[in-house]
Length: 111
Length: 111
Image (cartoon, rainbow over all chains, first blue to last red):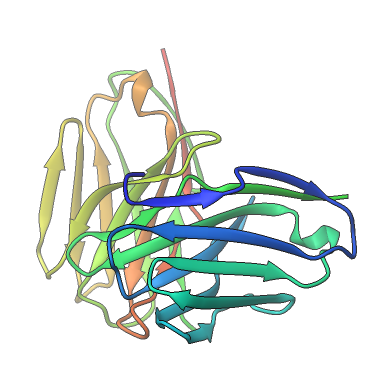
């Protein structure tokens, strides 16, 4: 979607390796989010940020960390990837008036 | 525990027929959003409902919100194949500006 990009789009990694996913926005939104999407579970919140260096945990935060050193960038790190973290990851920005705008997603496979 | 429940989870319907998808949520909120997701794609915003009694229509889709009943509906009129997708509702709980998603309704429209 315009204004929010994720990278990479696809990644295959081995169990135990660290992985970082990047979300970049050009909308200057305060709030940014990382969700994972799995069949039968819908979207589940991993972490979110409400400003530079201000982050908080979501529903499924174990095994994940985040950082936000600039308004426009929100990074999601899997410190030691496991097979249970194989998923599609979506970044989002939000406003009350418009709801969420999602990035295109990152399909991560941990082998 | 907060719950957002959609039903049905799977819906197969013939072209030209009408049907309704339901979204129930377990706590007070005045803001609800509907999204559409095509296979392998990101989520696209359909409707933003920001008050009790809100009704929005776009083409063959109409969404409504009853905050007293904690219920939103997405009504499909005279379905066409192009409406085949997964539909999600999301509720804004105004806690950290977080949205909570239903598990989605997978809609297949059969010619």
